[in-house]
Length: 145
Image (cartoon, rainbow, N blue to C red; front, side, top):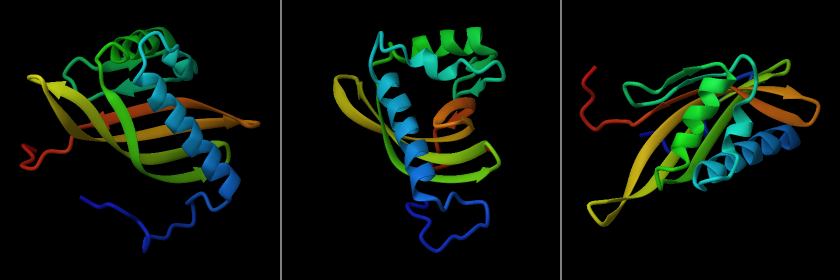
């Protein structure tokens, strides 16, 4: 798996440090909220255009009510979501990012770290961000497709 993008260049990558850092902070705040039951993590997914596609067979949520219900469920799973690498791009008020995450959880009483990759699409309004799309997957050593 690619662990850094130091040599990668794109004209749409967010080059303004304050904007890039504010998006990274927003993503970290979201993942911290995912890790905490009753954290109100669902508030990050209130945009009327929100769509979520998770790695599970039934993890498809369209619209804020469905998305917020799904996010509330995620906060109950006992997973600590730890961002490892965020690469982000932006055009106008829309940004997108690839987010490499380690999910820390217990499996059969043993600590496990599960790699996870999310693609996020965000809308920026003033100094605030909101999620428009979350697409997540668990990379597999032996992909089936």
